[in-house]
Length: 452
Ligand SMILES: Nc1nc2c(c(=O)[nH]1)N[C@H]1C(S)=C(S)[C@@H](COP(=O)(O)O)O[C@H]1N2
Ligand SMILES: [Mo]
Image (cartoon, rainbow, N blue to C red; front, side, top):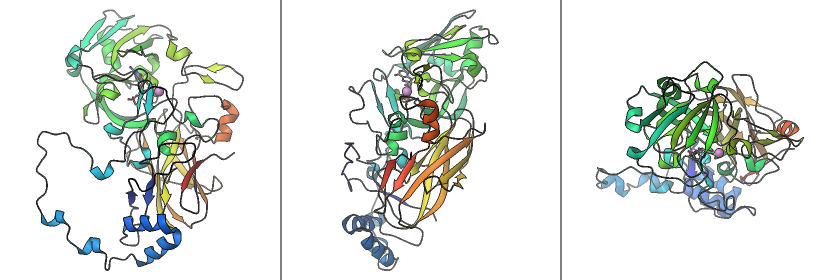
C-alpha cells in the first residue's frame, strides 16, 4: 500500500499574497493504492482542468497501455555512470527543490538569520544533515579543528584545555535527539503568518549525535558534581553566545559535547567541530563552536537569558529560563502549500516530540477537533527525539481541517491555541507548542488556518 508523494518542481509557483517564496513547498499527492498512476499526467490534468479531469484520469489510469511501463527507457538498456570514487554523494537532481529556505523579509541580514528545514518533504525521524535548519546569530564558520580548543574552568580543582584529538580519545556515546529553536512557530502567536510547515515548524531537526558526556569532562577537571551548580557554555563565534545549563540536567549524563552528527563530523553550519547537545532544551542552549565551559554556583543571567529568550506574559511580566521544549506535534503531510489531487486514500503523517521524555500518544482529527483517532507511532520512539506518526484517511472531497495532538509520558497534552493563549497571551515569541490546523479545501489545496 503506501501513498506515493510526488514532488513537482516548478509546477506551481503562484505565491500566497502575504508570502513570496513557495518554490519547492508545493507537493502534489496522488493515489497509489488501487494500482499504477501516471503522476505527472494526473498532476498536469488536475492543474489544468480541476477535479473532473483527474477523476476521469483516475478511472482510465490502469496498467494497460501505460507507455511508462511498456517502453524500455535508456537506463534499462545502456551503461550507467561510473562509481563516484572521490566525491561526496548528492541527492537526485529531481529532488533539487527539497531545500532549507529563508523566510523572505524575516531578518535584515543573512548572517543573523534562520533557514528552515523542509519538514513536508522528509520521512522518518532523522533530518539529513544538509537540510538541518540553521540559526546563526552572527554567521557560520568552518573552523580548523586542529586550532580549536575547549576550556573547562570556573569552580573546578584544575582548569583544563582539550584539543579535539584529546576529546575524541575519551569514551563516547551516540544518541538521537531533536533540536528545536525556542522561536519555532513564533510567527504564529497572533494569527496565521506563514503558509507552510517548513516556515511554521521548520526550526526543528533531529540527528544522531556522537560525543562525550559533559559530566565526564567536569569530573576530569575535578568539579563538585553534587552541589547546586550551573554551567556557562560559550561559543567561539562573534555572537558571544552564552547560556546557563543547570547541573541537574548535566548530572544525568545526557548533555553531550558532540563532534559527530549522523555518522560524520558535525556540519560547519551546526557548529563544527564541537557543539553542546542539551536534549529537550531549546536550541539556543545547544552552543555551537563550543570553546568554554565555566562552572559556577548560580545562573549567569547573560544577555541571551535576560534580554532574549524570555516569554512576555499577559500581565506584562517576563518569564525567564523556560528552556524545556514542551510536547508538540505537527502534521507534515498534508500540510500548508501542498495539494491533494483526488478524493480517496491518503496517509496522514507527521512528527511529535517532547523535551520531557517520550511521546506516548498522538491523536489526529480531520474535522477541526470534533473527533479524534489515535495515530500509529512508528518505532523507534525515543526520549527527547522526534517520533513519526501515521494514520489512514479517506478524503471525500469536502472541506477538512487536519490537526494532531500529542501527549508525552508525563501525561502532558499539547494545548489548543485557545488554551495556550489563555495562559500565555499573544505577545510572546518563544515556546508556541499549540495544535496546528491545516485546512483542506474542496480544490485540494491545503492552507494554514487557526481555529478560535
Ligand atoms: N555559537 C553559537 N551557538 C548557537 C547559536 C549561535 O548563533 N552561535 N545559535 C543558537 C540558536 S538560537 C539555535 S536555535 C541553535 C541552532 O542550531 P543549528 O543552526 O544547528 O540548527 O544553535 C544555537 N547555538
Ligand atoms: Mo534559536
